[in-house]
Image (cartoon, rainbow, N blue to C red):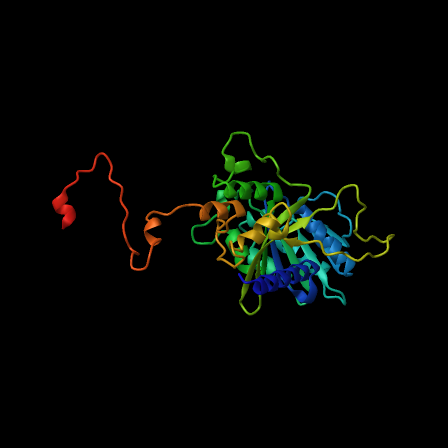
Length: 341
């Protein structure tokens, strides 16, 4: 990719992720977050809540598995054993249109996906309005009961991916970096957690990396054009004070910290290697390949010192070029008649 196109893609995708996380201009009415045991979605939910508080957006939190009300939540709705239609009315009343925008967060869709009586697409679509955006989490590691599955109906995750305007698939940075290191050495990529197939292993080493998480994004625009990119979201240290605005704290501006995964210092290639890989021995640009086509100064001197075969035949007086100089060996059979011909 040309440098100008690469810079344009980097700038465009960074602006896009900032717009999605800050929920500006209703960039994504329905955002689906797919997490697993290797990487939980809770850090991303905290990031959404922090940015919503900075933008003075009302946050409605539907709790399926969260016991305590998180910081920065205005309306907290715990889900009990109530029917789906009763829960739908309660959420709809909490998300009533107001002057400010509303961010509706559902921390788990596992209960609704496993309930045959709940019409998941209709249930979620009823909350999306011009002033309300939906953010829902789906746990990919939770198996669905066989009673809720039908051979004539698509899987709940398939329906959610079809309805969502933005899909975030979360990965642990330690696992992504380990897979890249193995690929650079042409080795098989390691597997973690349940994919290891080892009895008793549920969570692999390096899961939920405290330094940050990897966001694999798929955004679908109104025009139908899809954008795919992978980002790195650094997580704040536990020693730092929380940036979530509360009633007793003044509002703080949220500094953009999301970067492209390829720009991470531990993930990208060495800068000198990247610079030398694009230039040949004479400083000319060469095609971008998976191996280095350039020569070092020592390799260049060694190449100039090699004597090619028949080199002596090219040196001589005019008209003598093209001769073949051949030294007979002990195994050669000399025949005068053939040589004269």
